[in-house]
Length: 215
Image 1 (cartoon, rainbow, N blue to C red):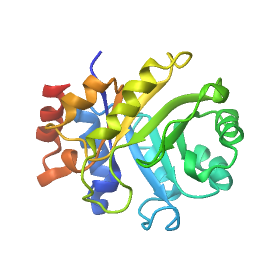
Image 2 (cartoon, helix red, strand yellow; image 1 turned 30 degrees about the vertical axis):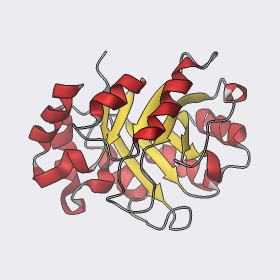
Image 3 (tube, rainbow, N blue to C red; image 1 turned 60 degrees about the vertical axis):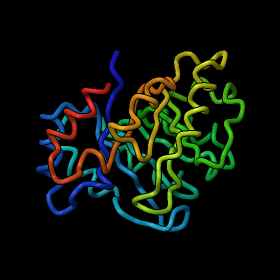
């Protein structure tokens, strides 16, 4: 099966997001990725729950929400009510990740755990059955143009081989483009979050086609 592509709206032109959602669906996006930040865990704030709620009526594509924030529990109910189908929280931001993942699944969404580049993968077996997917960041979450870190793909390779995690989806997020997508796929990634490479030059159709030609 070809790798799934989740365009990240953090790189999209924010002045016409409604049109962008339609273009992405026509171009064959598998889901829409939202980064929701608090300005503390990462030094940026781009998208919020109202935007997710307003865009939800435009498409039936799954909404994949990546919470880059400390203490994410308080936002989860509103986030799922707004239309999030999948929610990932950061391992670094959760003292009790099993409890948070259980909360996400109880609300009716799929639950994921994200890892910054500096964080090694722990034993994840204790998080089952609440854990559906894992997000491996392949850029430092600091600047919009942070470089792709190919060495992070080793986490995906090891994770795909881990006993007991056979049903887990592995997502690579950060700096993915047609030039490195082949290596990402070879590492075992099931889904890639792509921002800059989808919206570059405003040519969504062409950019998505270039990614699909590799995947």
